[in-house]
Length: 237
Image 1 (cartoon, rainbow, N blue to C red):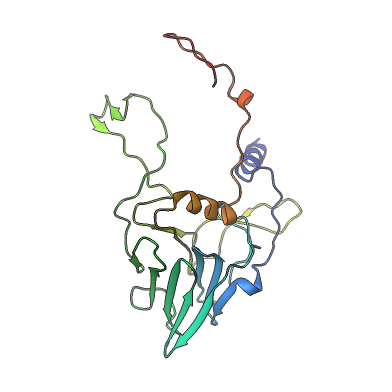
Image 2 (cartoon, helix red, strand yellow):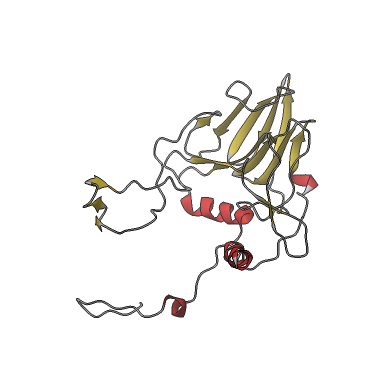
């Protein structure tokens, strides 16, 4: 029963799609060392990996299910001990052979009129647009009548800061079996980050997110059952 329940949950999470162990596009790997790899997924999305073992992850994860993507336009420049990766939306600057990503060896800034920002590891968003909340029980609007406080929404994908960092370092992976199943990452496998630069283009950011996270399935209307209200009549439209 437990295995059946897990199977159903995974089917919902993956939208029923059979994801394969597809390797990342070699052309999209814009810079690589023995323990560091940068992959450009879109003009506003870069994947940054640091692996102390030198083993990089190409298997799909719970968050990132699409690995083979069209290669966006980019330029790579080498300036002394630094490598610069440029797209139409951002400039990534990394100090060569410096290992683990820190505020001293990695920086990303907006370019070409995108809402200005200059990001370094460790920086926190200041104006996240927030995401979801588990339940509305006991809430009057956004205020809890039980706890006497406003609803503490989780951080969401988008922010007025103009950038988002997704840390996929510890998320589960899918294996390469006939029906891909979950597996844990090895302990201490480093950093696996996805940086999104979008400025005020929130719609474009959502589109970029679905490129690597997969399309979001829309449930059919009848799946929600009957809609009703004890106060007034209304339809599902």
